[in-house]
Image (cartoon, rainbow, N blue to C red):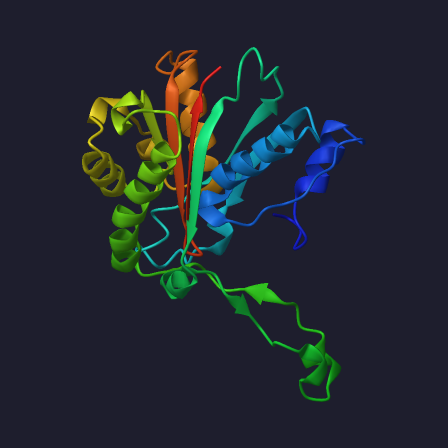
Length: 253
């Protein structure tokens, strides 16, 4: 975001949609899936009929470009989708189920903490110190710890989302669209779920880890290439800093 307080209002202004309510969600790499779930609840409640969900991150601003453990992994990206209401008596709800998990004890494994004084008003007596700009540190990640958590958390949230749907088994999923964090995580999650590799959408080789943008980017490419078709059952999952993991299972329409 170009603004500490978020980008949603800037998007609203750029679109020329003055009647649209807007707000930002902070859920890192799970952000788009959490936004999708949140938007669906507003539609289910009848509060809104059309919702734009945007997943975007510019992580190149927050990596140490001398640290090859992180700088080669991340990319900048943005993806979006529009959710719309439909007659539930005729079509039902395309969001079949979802599941969200969080583990705040794992924050130490992946974060970009505040870098500066907690209370600048109490620092020293000079205007120079008190006037310093606040900022955030570069991304700090313990890759092995995040990997060990992700290979357990991702299959778990997808499995629980499927179990809370009307699907019989994970085998009813046509496509698995996961956050594009790491090829080994994608392969491991699919293997643990018993989903064949040909059903796993992956474009990490093109863009790297684009955080909240990775799921909508992968989804968009799969639809445009003709892989994902109307009526297909899609299982998505986002996972990352927080630590957070979220899955949504839906029908593509």
